[in-house]
Image (cartoon, rainbow, N blue to C red; front, side):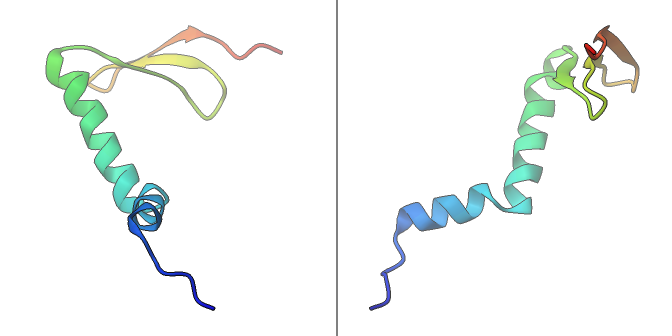
Length: 65
């Protein structure tokens, strides 16, 4: 018996989508850079960084070994 697709399935599919990643990224930029604030996140190297709208990136904390 096939399960009926419901709204929660649609939400789950959206959260897994590239569109969600793009929408989320745009909202974060709007909420940070749009208010004159840097984004703070962990980069691929495991460092915590401040990323400014002008492209400048400062390492706040280096990866712990």
